[in-house]
Length: 220
Image 1: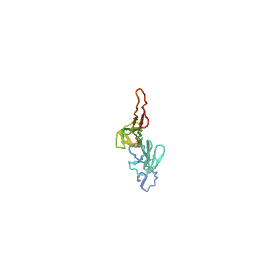
Image 2: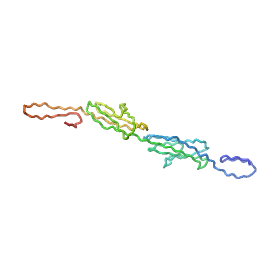
Image 3: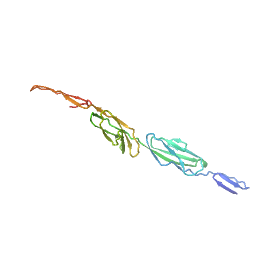
Image 4: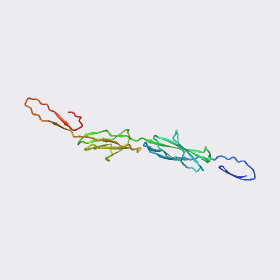
């Protein structure tokens, strides 16, 4: 018998009758989905792609899982995780049977969005106000105010009530906050008057101070 076997193929030239029982020949797919990814928790979506590094004959099927649910059956999948999630893809080479599989996993790390606030400030007309951006958590941040300043605290002297805003970004994750805003309350300048009084020697007099301006909360 002069024959050759390759995978499921056989070629026999002989006058002899023979029985041939084909077998499944499997080269498991070598799957690569790349390095882990980092995103911010602002509904950012990323596309994960399963590449096959060896040259199996195919065709291939794909099954993506987030650890609890099958999320896709295509080669490339777009995900939008709200928390750090590991995705696993299982690839089957159908030419080698249902057991001819390979897999790989990738973790999408979701970093939090920074939160910043600006305490309210009120001043009297002509005074300066100090505005400070206060991050909700400790960390290394960069700052950008609506007036272009890049420091945590700014000094401003508005003549009327103006609104200022600031955003911060985490220097390690590059995740940026939603802008925090505040409007400075500018009260009229404080003034006080005392009316002149005339008395005779030995008499007493009551002096009364009349304030104006400010925020109305006076001390004497």
